Image: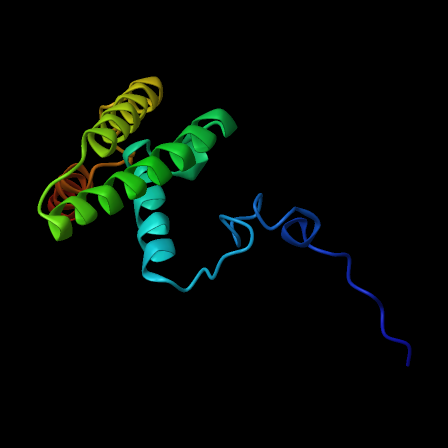
Length: 135
């Protein structure tokens, strides 16, 4: 009996960056930095209401904002280890922080709650009413 070949999934047809399996080229995605980057991206996407609620442009800005956040955290760690920052390091930090602020303003600084209709309390009240009406 001949085996039929399955059509490739949409995920298999998209690039590794598009389908979310690779964030950056040429690096080990198991490092603490990459885990932190994935966490930051996930938190920003969650604040925007989930990946389904985000446009491609918002997702692009989220990636950049997350990477800038990560790099600022690295600089802050260096400042702590060295006990101080040079004027050049402070200038770089200031520029990156300003760029991050502008990116975050572009995608919105307010958290967008996810709509979970019906609200669980409303569902429970309706269930109680229906139960009371049945008795």
